[in-house]
Length: 401
Ligand code: ARG
Image (cartoon, rainbow, N blue to C red; front, side, top):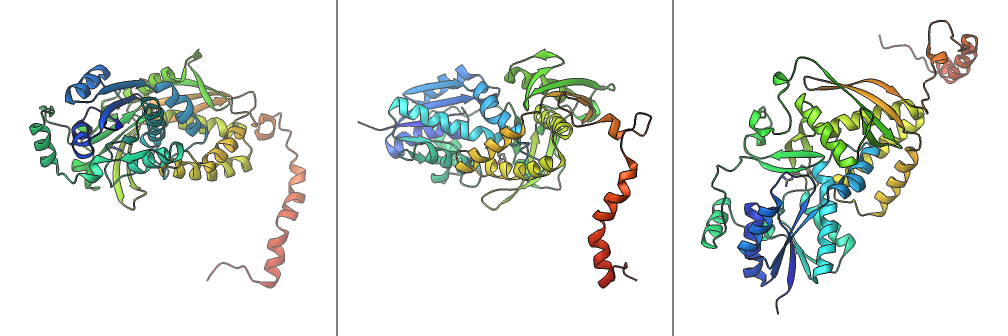
């Protein structure tokens, strides 16, 4: 009796070849497993393709809700952005895929899971480490890391095994997409001097092509979770999809990032993340209003750590749990509404309000109604400047000649 393996199956060439390769190389019965986290695809066609190639079973799971509620929104509350630019769409999807693979493997009595990642990227780390955290007894196989086939050899293997090779001129890019964003790599993008061609983009209009009038939208948050758009209550998936459409139409969300991969490679990545950009900016704007200065400063450091650990495949760790607890505590008063202006590729925050706002008009205003006691300032400054005066007495602090 052969063993069963659950293979994360996208329907693409690599994972299609993997179905056959796992049978030939390891004598596995292959269960194809496709997770929908918002990547546009014909799920039924993918399922059928896996069976045609020889999978003993083909499962598809709609995990959009869990993706948004259990991975994306916690990362949004944390303001997690890798190296100041990348909203982590791919990186957030992988631990969920690992989790679902493990659940499927247990249910189907499989002894291994397999995935299509190469040995050069971050995704292999995220899935391997995710599985190691949740089910260390499962073997993880990454055929593309082992088989050492070139693109041409892969196509030849497919042809000799009756695996359909897409006849349409395949996209020159390697693409991964989910509800939070689209990652685009390879081809001309590998030269960081090349401007990304228009055909790299699918979700966002070129700012040159966008309407000449701005669009406005209002996002409301409840404890750091976006809950309504223009006063209409929406579930998380729908809210993200609607903002995605509005912002993509206005050219928002294009990112061009030379990033540092965990495996040591610098990599030029193009992203489209219209909804992520709008929501992250709006969320931060609301935090600016309701969190105290020291809370904001400290939270920014945590955001950085949080983004690094998501990027580096450490979602299922004690540290992430600890940071998540901290983040949740910071969100107690992150409730309110933010008004956003979308125009020609720019997403600008133009208004914010909250019942927990720390903004006090009577302290801030220069008009009548000012209650700030300016007479108290000299005493405050006297004490504040004390160490400076002390130092200046013994160590001249003059500017250089
Ligand atoms: N560089 C990004 C990341 O590490 C995107 C990876 C895209 N993955 C892919 N299989 N095309 O998260």
